[in-house]
Image 1 (cartoon, rainbow, N blue to C red):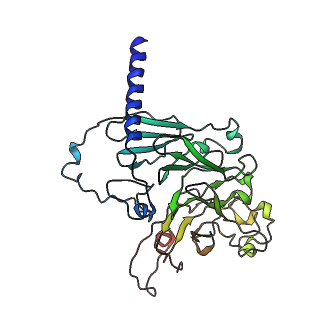
Image 2 (cartoon, rainbow, N blue to C red):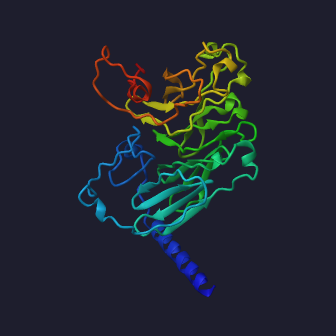
Image 3 (tube, rainbow, N blue to C red):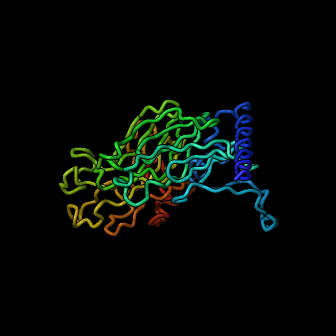
Length: 349
């Protein structure tokens, strides 16, 4: 027991020492310019770049030396559904853990700098089925803040140096409009953009994409993925009452085109999926199974493309890869998710 206490004391000392160093040497703030043209040495968002490629230009490790790699350090994570991708900035790794736990780790030594454990409501499982609320795929970083979405339907920001809560904003009442925040946000010109998987019990108001001011948490806009009666797209629901329009979710991380100022995000199927149970098979039920292009400043849908009128719960919320390429529009015959990734992001054609 004494040996264990000494070991814990040493670990605590290392954490305090590392944290003191981190606090004594403030890191440069992460700007929009850095996010839109990130250094190869850092990994500042889920797929490294806002176009969703997930590609690193680093070439120190190659086919000739990859077999020489050896484990340098490892550390345990919080128990639960592991789907997290870390951020790395200036030698610090910010790791999303299940159940709203976030860790800052010295990327060289593996020492824990700080850990944030959000207090998750005891009844969260009564409203978000299974353990989906545990998912925490990614974080965002902006200025001196680490930003995430929470199981209880908040967006929140932590001090990147200390892990202290800086601001939090409720998006939805999880008991009234339950939705899972299984993916974290991206930053688009100072705005925190996040989608969510709306539980069928949450109704259409739970199916929203939101933008918040990254420095204050103020909500700037929200966009429903299910049209209200009288809105464009309402006619595609075949007269189904608003309260029965459910589950057009956006639970994967969006992409951002800074040049066009467009957010690109995918949507899921309806609930129920078979359309003969939901107003008829000849209705499109917008905007399910679609790619949406949103004005990043207003949330307005600039264009959309519906990939499939889905009766089988196939879902199309996956990440959108933004690619610049020359094509012959007459000869191009792109289909399915290939087309989803290859749409002209200016107008969706």
